[in-house]
Image 1: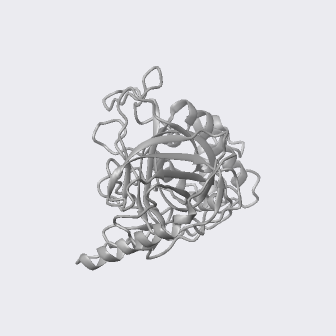
Image 2: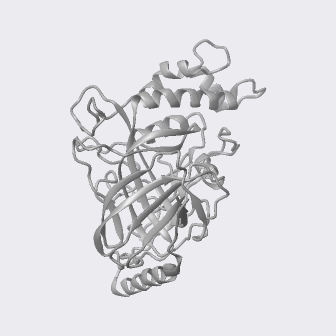
Image 3: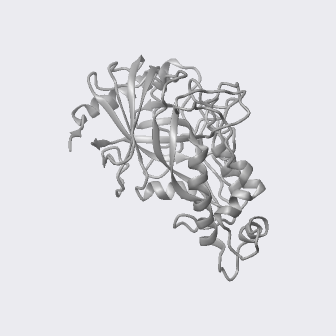
Length: 386
């Protein structure tokens, strides 16, 4: 097993980024510092993935310098991603979350990095969308932003599933963490090109202080994307038709937390002295994978929360009324597949692949083959062993 670390120059990286941030602050008449905004929690929610909690919350940042309060329910800021990310100027998610995110962290504008080094990070928070417009991107080229994942989360919120709380709990427990690294040939990160690599980490007791060590899960697929760096922001290069989108196993809170194979279409983030902010990942899951993974996971989550409960919550009563077709006080995967509400939410919404599985976006296609997906993230520096 090989360990790659570059911590002899870590101090130089932080000083370079912070110095540039201070210089930019003096030159700007209007600050664009990130503002952390806490999302409001629901009054009552169903336990999920080992978490019994009241509702859901998330925090977001607004890259225009203005905050917005999270709405009741699963509140998650949308993202105005660089390049293709973002739908209609949604606010960029970059909240303080599990693992000590910094409120008021220096915004580097143009970051800094070792001249010959690799910058390594671990995601310390996944920001769950609460609508189809949050963290959306146009995947199929029809001019409309896509994020069916956000629509599914919105539909499930009716039944009290606390998606953001579930995602935070999994991150805090060190399950399904995403690792990220890229070469920084330009020490100022003002411009340049690079190759970005994503891995999944082995389960661990995570250290999100910026010096934690994480081991790549060699059994899980990794993803490599070409990227362009401009003014401290890295945006992946668009895939051309005929190319193959890299696939990863992502840990996502669809009612119960699931591991879903996802073809990664794009990623973007901003580098600061304290890690990565305003991160956004977009991709899609094949309709066949969605059908194989999500209905059984959702059925198990419903049964865990509702089946055999002496005094079921209002959300459970609603779920059983709407989804329990045979009235046996249990909700099966097949009943979910036939439910009008969830059948529509889980239906593929984009056509992205040809018969060989290569990227072939077709916004005009009537028959779709994948479920679009997008979420935000933040990350802190890490040591990656692979």
